[in-house]
Image (cartoon, rainbow, N blue to C red; front, side, top):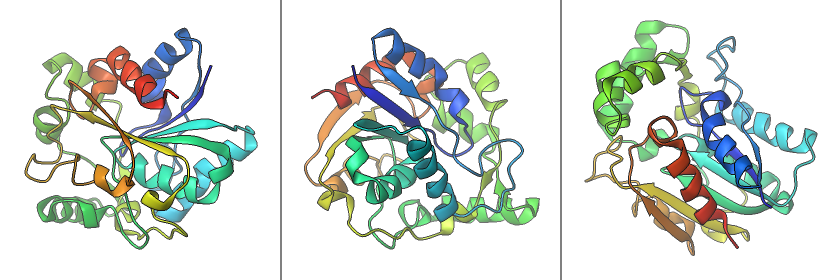
Length: 241
């Protein structure tokens, strides 16, 4: 039995990963789905990246979790990298699922196409509360392109504004992911066009892991909604010894 900690991406909470966790538990594993500070509906949208990382460090320590397989989705890749730098002795393997892989001093915005940075900055300025939301047409066509309209609408309805400062802040690491001692895996959903295919998740970001295991599976960026069972299998394949 393995212990998985699933760390969600922007606009999500841990609740959205519970169907994936349920499949992991049915296979005999322990699975946890914390919510990052700044992503709960009641949280202020002024949270920065360091606070967000601290919240998952605190979660792991408070629950005394060890020998964990730490999974990060999208923005969650920033979080799990920071947690691994702080708590390497508690982590067996890092699993990046279509996730950002930062080196020391990089921000998430550094890894986005410039047009996305400009869009998010404009939305945040218009809202005025520090949060950014994803327009539904982008969600529908680029993020959950493997789901039907009902699935796209239902999933979009549970999203929350994301604190834009976490996208701008530069991460502080003592070691880059390629130099970290634990195992590393990258799960690549092959129909994921949330980043354009000329600006891909894999291998552009995955190669920053150094030695890593690649698991490829059909699906969009939001496979947690469109096929959580398939995603759970990919995560188990990524986390196997």
